[in-house]
Length: 416
Image (cartoon, rainbow, N blue to C red; front, top):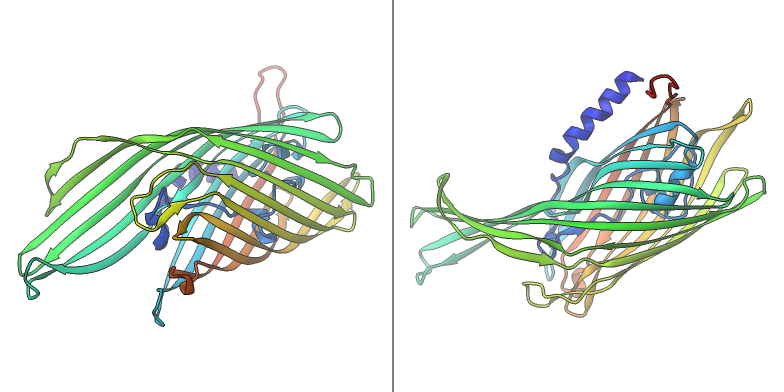
């Protein structure tokens, strides 16, 4: 088990450098990029309908109140990877562009239940990602003397967080997550011209940070009944993303000039989610969830683009195969499928940018201390008939969960 902890600890250090690598996403040029809306863990297979979920042995980031389901003195180390392949169709064109693909770290977390009624978690995940690239040509008063302009965007906003939860009686749990958002968004425009012997890069970097808080509550009925009910709700809010923007002009790796740093900000939404789960003792369960984001009115530096309130809907079902060993119930494996519908906070004209997908997958406990989960998702984002770039994508997530019991020493107050 010690080797497994070393593996996850190393992954925590590597995650920050690998999370930023993403495939091309045309609409991430707007706002702060594409927001992360998929669980990328156990619950991704059931449509990411997770706010009401409480599975023993699994940490549920979407609702901090779910931490209390972890057994006393158990520690969970989670890491998730995501692979994605996308093809694009431009408005008014029949040609399909792509595929583009990647494979990156999406989530690293540690959760521990230190008392019979209280638990905490820490983690790191992407909040938004930016990755776009396109090429255009132009000329300087002479159609025979043209130049190429290559634009590339990279970076993203990351979320590091601390969660705490406490049991309230026998059927309620409450939790809170405090977050710190940080990161940078880079836009690099390169100008090339053989006729002018021109090679100049214009690099604009925006640095952001913000603080946030999420409050969660869960109700769950007795597990002794044939059918169990659970309800979950969360409310999240963040301060404005604040920072500064700076532009550098570079030629052949030599900086020509740098502008003075300019203060910038980006207003964040107030969001809420509500979910319901129904499960029976035979292992079959059904889950639904709705999400609403209220975005402040603010300008976007692109014509015909606006920021609007957004809604999301998630639904899924799962079968969990469990066996009884002595006085304990142990899950051997699970299978799940679902669907999700998400509006982007961005709109093109009067048309919303919509992302919807079907999901499926499963997981298995390989050993008493290690489990894996795999989920797959096929979806579409954007609608070319509405003058939007359409993205058809397939993605999969692989998660690893390491579980063990840490015993405390009364003499030294240490954990093994």
